[in-house]
Length: 148
Image 1 (cartoon, rainbow, N blue to C red):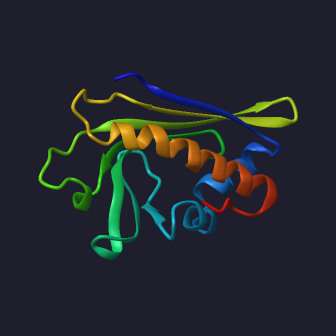
Image 2: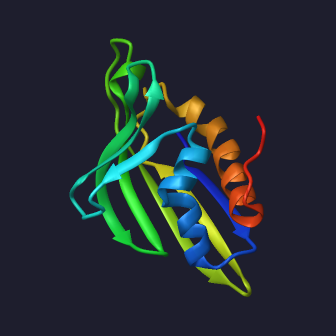
Image 3: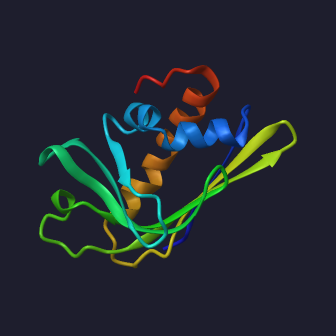
């Protein structure tokens, strides 16, 4: 499977984009009521939790935080939550959020890589990232999310 790589430019500072990606308020707006649960210490657990098949505390995505540099880099392993497995194997991939100034803008690069060839979540991730990233860009630049 090929790596999923997305680049977006935001009319905002790296701090504003970071806030849009990881603040509790933004995460809830972008990820349909979910929140990130983590200490944000490298080596610790990171989870996206919210309404879903297992109630209000459904684990949608989880993994281990590999690298954390505020306003610049967040990298973690990625596994889908138990309610998505439907008896299948829990494969691991990796997500990298990278921010860098670019003139008066901020360049966001998202890399979702290290896929197992049999991971069934690949196709859903490939299409979902466009909506998530577009929604994030809109929220950061306008204060509103898109209506899907």
